[in-house]
Image (cartoon, rainbow, N blue to C red; front, top):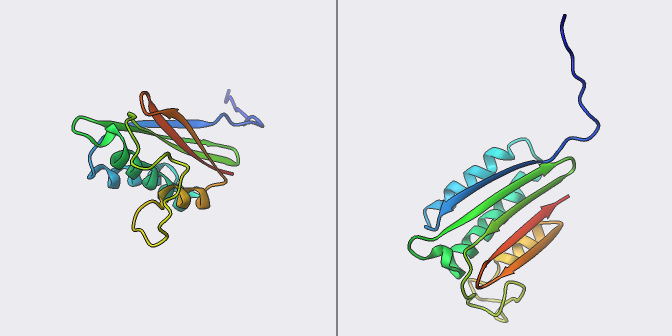
Length: 140
């Protein structure tokens, strides 16, 4: 007798998490990791760009980018919703916080979080310099 299963009306969200060494050469690995997981997702390009910006911020502005540092990338997929997060190891931020934009519109840096905010439906930030930060970009 063949046993058939029918899919449930609600599919539980899937979650993948990976820790990366805090080195600049890992930026490409982060993009490939997220692109692979989201290959069939319509928001894949935006999510890959967002996670690349968030990982870059972790490497530049926190202890994650120091020798021996690391950061964590998490991807969550559910019905109609996608979220990518980067968790760093804390430390001081060069500017006065992740929600502040530099006043110089011609500066070559300081645009990462505004880009993420433009790509995502919503951006959440938690944590502090002592314990680490998690920035999540949500795509609905």
